Length: 266
Image (cartoon, rainbow, N blue to C red):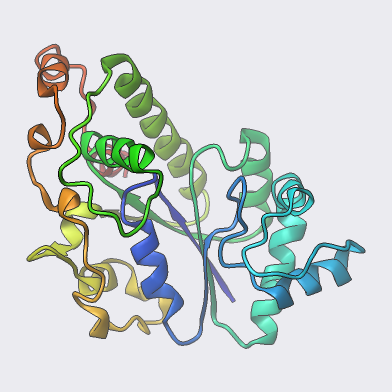
């Protein structure tokens, strides 16, 4: 059974990718299984199997928020993932898929986990300014899903943005180093998956379909609409003080698109 990991930052379209993959025959698709609160995509039968294998007594509910289960998932990622693999194998799945964000596992746990199994990697990237502003808006409204934040134009802090972009680039390059030990990673830019304001699953299929035995369906083209704020091509129209970012740009302090940085490492 193939293990496929999607490496991403928040607000890069990762949920849309997970939705497409999860509906693919033969694929056991998850979301961020190492989330610091919710075990997104983990089902009751999988929790039951984890209990059987590890002698634990976690509550058998979907997307569990139990603190004890969170501790187990993040402190014993190999045991946790082994149980997910066994469940997927019993269901005759050909691929087990999940995503991971920065800071969900510590450096030591990352190394331990990704050396315990053979993985194929997909890197999903987006313009750092756009992903930062999108995340900032989501924090303001208190949700990351199905909310139109077009009219919200927050002020950005140069200091906070610089910290964000440095952390994002560091995360991507760290994971790219791990990924290169296993295989040739697939790099996909969020911007390349848009067509007429809609997410086009065919773009994803073209880049990563071979990891799923060509089973990804392009029938979902356009089915996952994006919020209007994500369709605004000019980040200057998204914030109240674009001069802050423009000043950083003039000083040469804006980093390249993470996708371009990773491709330069190939």
